[in-house]
Image (tube, rainbow, N blue to C red; front, side):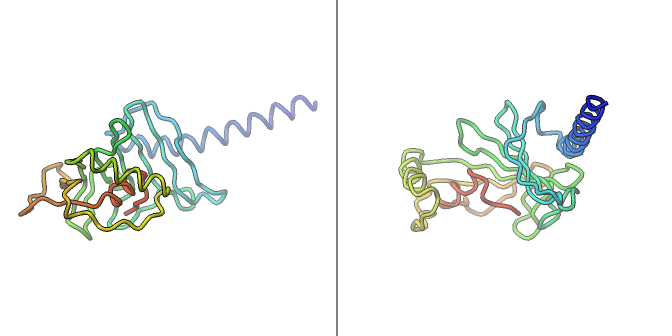
Length: 185
């Protein structure tokens, strides 16, 4: 009899775990650009069902979203998901999606749904990156935007370039923050 209850309890735990995984799998499946199979990279969802979760795959993509009361949380500007693309541990692109999994622009800025990062001066960035890494990100670097180290290209929800009068550059520290996913919409 004890063995029956033990098996029954184990089955209930597995069923509950499978159901929670299915819920996240349903969310993951909405973003068609995110390749499967996936594995959990980080999970900070508390027992009430609140917090962020990140998934990764063999293509070095990272999909993240937040849940609130176990439901997909809509963030600033209608964004629900962020998809990060990496190459050799360097962030190449970030795309944002709405709750349905469609590319969604951040309306409060330039309505960009994707940002591509181009490191135009890799040697200089590596020097700055070492300083930032050594300080574990806790460093107040002088804004080096004018040194034109990292350029960004913005794309709309149709994945078309957003035309600008002149190239846009960001600081090495800002790129580092994006690279380690410190930014949420």
